[in-house]
Length: 100
Image (cartoon, rainbow, N blue to C red):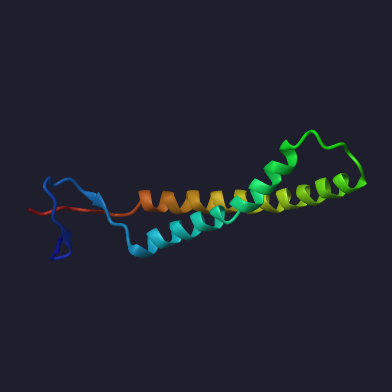
């Protein structure tokens, strides 16, 4: 409950003020990371299948999978860095004093 821009709870300890926009931004980054799930499953199946003998076709597929992985890795590292910064900003948010 909000009354006079102060949050009312049972105890009067300060809490962080987190806006809907802050939550939306973090959720958006999580969706970006989740978008890689299908590609990573395909790559895992490809690399797990050790029974297939190597030939030119397999080598081309390996090269293509390696390129997909490199793109994923660059995107993943960038997304994780950004997500960590967003979480740090949420942690540093101003505390709101609770009134009874």
